[in-house]
Image (cartoon, rainbow, N blue to C red; front, top):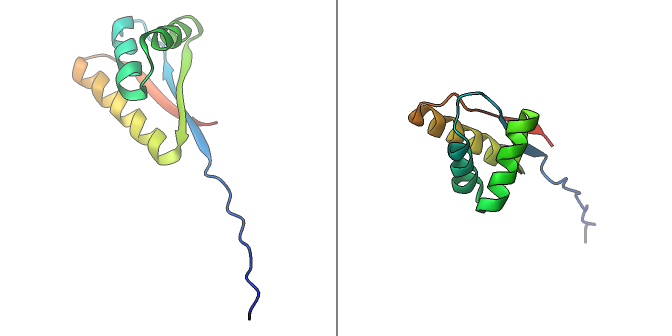
Length: 93
């Protein structure tokens, strides 16, 4: 019987989805996006929104690369539909 090689698979790299502050997007819209696309409750969404507002950026969640890219596109599309300049990016976690 041939010996089986054990392959070590590394966990996938994770990426954080980050929203950037602007002076035009309403705070309520940011909270709605955090609740709808990232499943945060109202309290968590409000805290993240305040972090974005005061620090210029805030992490919405951490995901695998494909899921993070999809979340970024969903947020940008929602912002465009609503006429807001909200920016959302992904970075290696």
